[in-house]
Length: 446
Image (cartoon, rainbow, N blue to C red):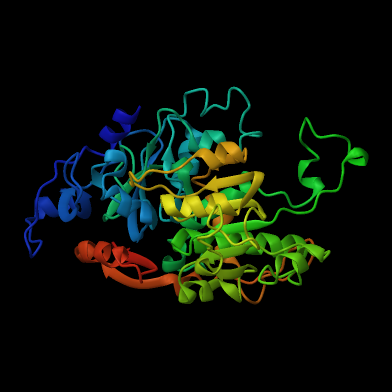
């Protein structure tokens, strides 16, 4: 199936382009500009002319890319992660140009309505035929949308056997596409995929908020026999792009459930634990200017990592924070960050790994065994939920059930710089700088 999907997008013969990007009329009709890794094993990419893809498989759409985002995963791929070669990128917003019919009249009619729509997309492309895609074992309900993410035959946009978003055009199945509300700008819509990755944590039910969360589980005792358990104390480690998106999502989830007047975790551990109010999530990072982006608007508290480190303690963490958190989310993408996250997590707590990296540095896994930590990976999430968050506006941002005010996300504040596709190599260099937040690439004008 992977080979078929690659064929459906015309396996590219990577050809260099001249400095002026001049081509004859035939080339202009069949070729497009892209930023690609030319060959397997290469650890560099470049702006090139490549064949324009054609959606040959039934149900696939041709999408004219408006904007693409540069993600840390893209930078890791350029270091050799996944061994990928082809067009890079998996964050985008674009307009559906064409759809290959699949022979079913109803499906074809529905697909036809997508032409002209502005969309974002799920990056995992399943085969639609295996037991995972068909949810044969009914695992979606207990494994949080397993079929969306884990087809064993899947390709992944810009990551695994499927050309990505840093190009004028791409192809994806219509079933992967989500229509972007008209009042969400292009630069905001590009955040749908990384924001969805943060929403995945909520979708996976990794955080305990109340006993009602477990009431539908088969092994849960009757409500009258359940011992009341306090909400989980949550730590987020890493103030990079993904860490900040996680803070935006989990802070608002906390506010939606408990209101904004909950306990600040910047107080001492003892005083927080004596309060009857749930603690807000806390984001640990290295850069005050990055922490400032979320501390007043997202519903999380923020703290510098340097303030919680103690080289004299057995795990390198101060007593106030050592093993104090029920759920720790590591978004650092580094073995050193994972070591700090392990020290923050209480025995038998949950350690969630949210980042991928190409590092070969050693890591001591003994604390995971000694403290019997539950280690959980977390990857792609629900694009529709991300778009709901992006659609929040200051004049209507209330939670419908409890009338709790949820602040809108102003994600444009994270954009450091925007580049045209012809200068995508400069965009990558900018994204590699430590001071950079988010870089976007304009692939086509509307």
